[in-house]
Amino acid sequence: MVDVLDFNVLFPFLIISASVMGLALMPTTLVAIITGFLFGWEAFPILAVAYLFATAIGYLLGKRLDHNSLEILLEKYPKARQVIAEKQDQVSQLIFFVRISPIIPFALSNLLFALLRADLKKVIWVGFLGMLPRTLLAFTTGIMAKSMLEAFREGNNLYQMLIFFALLLLSIWGITKVVLNFVKASK
Image (cartoon, rainbow, N blue to C red; front, side, top):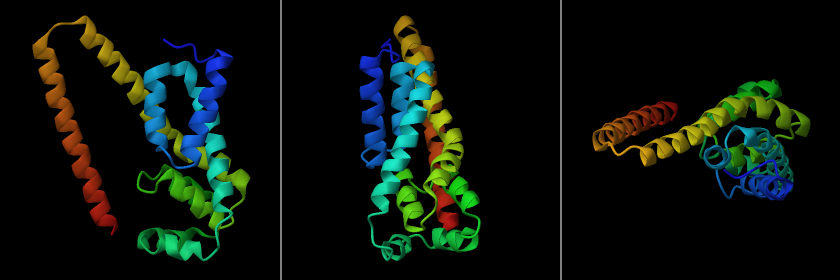
């Protein structure tokens, strides 16, 4: 296992992960899964700090956009427009629920908050609390994937592997169906 607490690993990891998330080069969920897989629990605090920096990067880039960009951004998301109209006076709630939502991508939400002129401190801290459950789930998934990979390497039981992959495919099918129904219902 790589020692993520080594400064020669920690600093580049922090900069790279904050940059790829903040510049929308990679989804935050994927970064969390990869981090959990490669580094384990000791990297979670570093990932959390990278997430905070990524929020600031995305928000500050969004501040450079024209305010009319908000209308263009929301054209394809009528439900998001409705939620924003309802919660515009309750910015903290808006930030929290947009961040916890699996439907609105991290990068899009950063632009949205910047265009709404939300306070950066609120976006960072309330957004972090909203994103924390998804991040923990993704991070734990990465750790579990590594554990399962190690278990498969140690065992030679073909029967166990077949059952595992059958259940995995069933789970993916079920989750996909739920997400597609949710998306269809939200339109």
